[in-house]
Length: 242
Image 1 (spheres, rainbow, N blue to C red):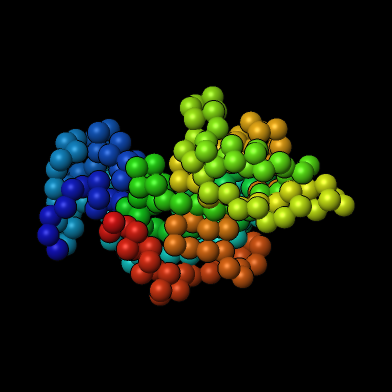
Image 2: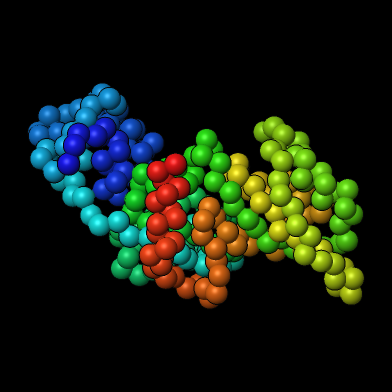
């Protein structure tokens, strides 16, 4: 194995995302062959050098990738100090070596990627990579086309105008007074879809993420987890390379 930057090796080992690995290095919590390293440009050979974080040896583990259908009322963490239901309640023993890529808020359901590949997690969540995410949205009321056009063009939020979104109207239910549509964004700001819908005057009733990058929720049952298929992993790693 050739030499690579420490933060990349730590991310690949599932210790932390690349960004968090940089923080560990700067804090002096990383050692290479017994010596504390604080320089972000430092390189090492994971097959030869001995790496430690907080004096615990770092072991490169096989990369694993899972898809999880998060239900509503579940926190996107492996532990919750408030005792609310979290991802660990669904994945069992695997919680020790997996962490979620990105977040879904407490009341949002849908697709989550779980992995120990910190390098991939960094690329899937960093805004510069513009990973597309599609959500199925249900709002009370009959949304006029011009309001959907506003979402397509971008709306002004308190943290700036949103990038143009792809919006596909799924239909109106006049009896129940509900509009359903899919929206695809790539920015991933906090609670972005909910805030966008608030701006156009149609607050979200139900929100579900159905796609994330090359992954699609498909027929996975709510609250279920499954390993990614070989072809899905290939598409993910292609995203990582790009």
